[in-house]
Length: 266
Image (cartoon, rainbow, N blue to C red; front, side, top):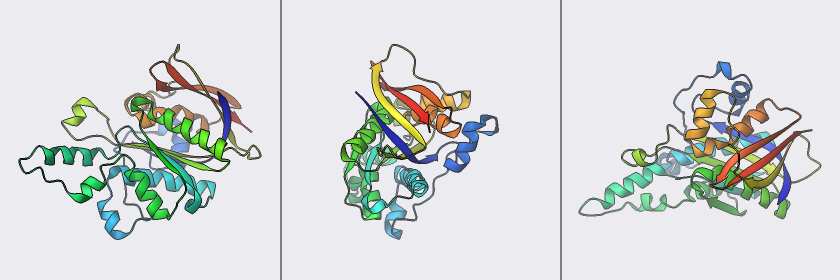
């Protein structure tokens, strides 16, 4: 299996990375980067009531999705999406577990609504009034690669742009002790299979995990890559920030498989 897509837009939010504009500079010159807690803001696209209820995963997903769509200049009302996350709304999961541990076992209807893995995708498509196809998936530490593979495959098969949103947020304790994530991290890629498009092209294929996945060049970014599943995409973002004419990247996917990216700048 091998196929190609173009990257038309990028979004990024993470520790010490406010957006792709800043991130592009820091990933290209990482000496200027300093880790700081990820800052999340309420999505302007949501109505006031939904905005107040939006959890961290929704805020993060909207932030990176809006950046990628703005850069690509696409019509969000007709945009197909793939949302990838290892845990989705982790704080909501924690709150539901707390409620179910009480004698009354009373669950808030709002929390129940947000408990599904596709909650962020649902908020996005409601806010953008989009009826385009949407997929939400999880593949544990391989969630970024699974999402990228799915989004690229849809872009090729449907012959239309597809937005990938990969986002992870930490759990509260005690769940954090079992599944520790140091901070929130999200990225978005607007992919298109149109061969006439310039810019960066990605060739995707699968290979046996006989070698290590491609690390980040900066130790701080490498620590993020290793700790947060969505941040497995950082080596690709490094390449997009300071592109060489061609590069080959191996991204963690399944236990015995890597997603191999052939990155070409035109």
